[in-house]
Image 1 (cartoon, helix red, strand yellow):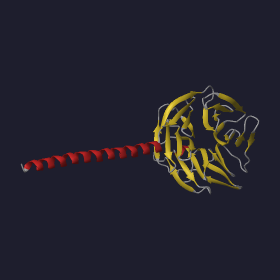
Image 2 (spheres, one colour):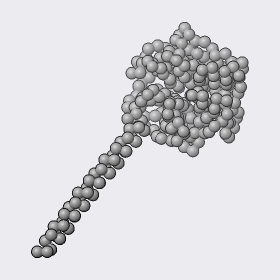
Image 3 (tube, helix red, strand yellow):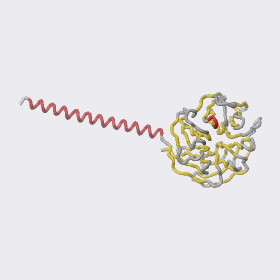
Image 4 (cartoon, rainbow, N blue to C red):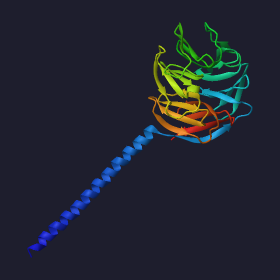
Length: 292
């Protein structure tokens, strides 16, 4: 008779402990799931969604504003203004062998005209004006403007022309060391930082507003030839033209994602919110990616 309460007490403890551990495990599972969901949602990933076919464009570079995309036609003398659904709006002509293009404001772009040895400001067909420089540009490939600052990459000279609010300088020089260039192509000024596609050195070089070298991105990622770049608020898109790849880096230069599918000699990239547009030079298409 004395053993009955003891057995009941033991069984009660076992049952209590099972319930306790089950509850604790359930709570830990919920916490872990919440953490995983929050991290994935905050970070997000890019996924291929569709492609736009182009006709007789031979696209090199792409940029956009709130309403339209602008695509340079490398073998012609045109900029193609398009809707975001791929519809052609206007062909802006008399752009002499355009290379890389960047949006300046709504309806206004800056583009490097390699055959004309100039960079130009474009606001529709009737608003094409040359950006003045105090020196000859042999083969301008990229141009970007931020405030009173203008940077223009010269592919053949391996230098960058820089008008720093009225103070004109050059930086770069031929070589493969830090602050040396081999075929600089696309260039972008973003929040006082200069990002430069050092195409034949297979990397992106980063400079401050005084043209002081800061760091290199992508030099350890087996890039074959850098094509175009785009810097958003928190990511850097880099096209590997020779390797048929697209690489996405954090704003600190950490590699986040790489893509190979639906890419044929990708020459440039443009990011708008949670959509990304990649120029496929060889396929004559624009590949579209969305962030989930």
